[in-house]
Amino acid sequence: MAVAEPAAFQLATPTRVYDNVRMISEKLRNCKIDSLPERYVWPKERVENLKPGNHETVAKEKEEFQNLSIPVVDLAGLDGGSEEVRAKIAREMRTACEDWGFFQVINTTVPTTVMEQVNASAREFFSLPVEQMEKATEPPGKPLQGYGGRHNFLSSEVPWIEFLGEHHAPVPGVKDLAKKVWEDGNPKFCKAITDYSNSVEQLGVLILELLAESLDLPKDTYSQHMQTGHHGYWRFNYYPACPKASQTIGIGPHCDPDALTILSQDQIPGLQVQKANKWVTVEPLPGAFVVNVGDYLQAWSNDIFKSVEHRVLVNEETDRLSIAFFMSPPRMLNIEAHPKLIGENQESVFKTFTSRQYLGLLLNNKSNGDVGMRGLDYMRRETTVA
Ligand SMILES: O=C(O)CCC(=O)C(=O)O
Ligand SMILES: [Fe+2]
Image 1 (cartoon, rainbow, N blue to C red):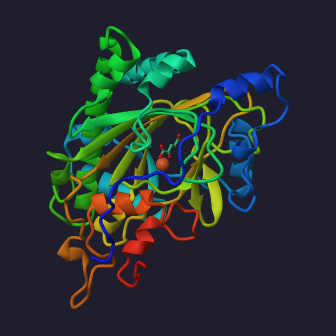
Image 2 (cartoon, rainbow, N blue to C red):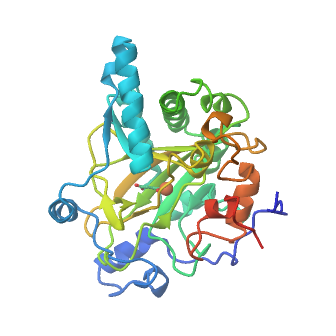
């Protein structure tokens, strides 16, 4: 294995304290400032074709891209127990994961009340005074946990986002997090997140089973790694309205360093997926989840499924909330393709690696899309890591 184990997850630059995006948004709206602070302005070389994330953008794209849109897979047929229907749904997912790396699922078993409660909890958190939200800020060694809102990490330009995230597995972190923010530990908030994480994780397991079946592999090929010691991480992404939406970005282009991501977005468009050199906006569908292949699933599938670059636009008038759940195998598990997917006398496309090594590689800033090479490209057999 050519990639060295990281000493510790480190930030490229020390954290400095700035206004958070909600404060800047308010100052812009009240004309206390008339332009975006420089660190939020993303140069054209780094992000092409920025525009506000709104329904007009979706409508224009539909015309321009001739209705190109990410596939929608309807799970309703699974209830009937028919094997043919299950195989058809699995095939649809496979095609979507090969062609797009993304699809939306509708008619899932995730209860509407669970989604209503978790959305309300996210909104409750992001309406707190900044000082209270910041009680959930983690030290720089944990850049993606707790509350994040005054960014200065990974790149010189910072994204227009506030987030709150924690592990659900292997050890659920929500209670400790809530205790820091609310004196009584907000049991309702903890329950909402726990119920949501459990339901969405179950949906993820089902999708991983269907994807394994679609490749003619045993059903539990991937889902077996989501039973114990696996990582489930939830994150609220909150993008306040930005009057200068064409100058900044909610999340810059990236691929997800996980096996599978399941995302619920509100009805404000913003998520864009790279397809045939175009940024295609994912049209919000009520009750749908956006599912995407992460880097580990691409490796597991021996490059059949694609972990595809995506990014998030912000809206000029309205805030946007998305709730993500990231699923990964245990940190020390060797990630490698099933032998059936590797041709005779051939090697797998990717070297064997663990997610621990992989995250170390990303966080030590070898690659985050910025340096022209994706993290997973470092794991291709033909690549030598310096
Ligand atoms: O907010 C979204 O729609 C997508 C968020 C995302 O890509 C992520 O959290 O990794
Ligand atoms: Fe993502």
